[in-house]
Length: 120
Image (cartoon, rainbow, N blue to C red; front, top):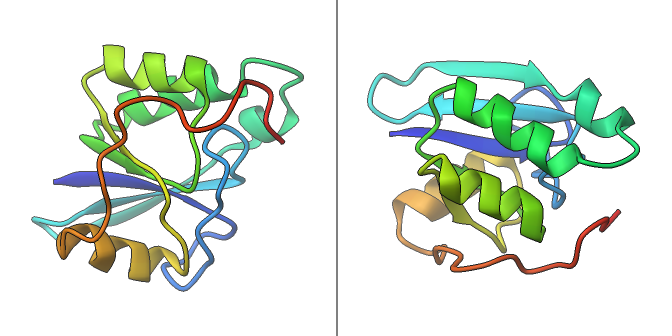
């Protein structure tokens, strides 16, 4: 499975960033192959608005099947849902810890956004 996690840095030991659209980094982890790819999210960090939708487009282009993050706003959630990407919110700790939480079934799939738009 290809998982995108929001991160404060570009390594697995980085802290998970709680903001989906404004996270400085996305880390793509392929749990089947073990491959890891980092993608800078400078467009989301610098966007005045629409950061979540832009981030959803990036995640979709990466071929992710799910996103693990702290929080996800309404427009980003709808964009991810439209792309068929599952969202898991409420994750914390390092990126590596969040991957293990997902694998262990400790994270719940989000059924809607958990913050209002323009959450910084």
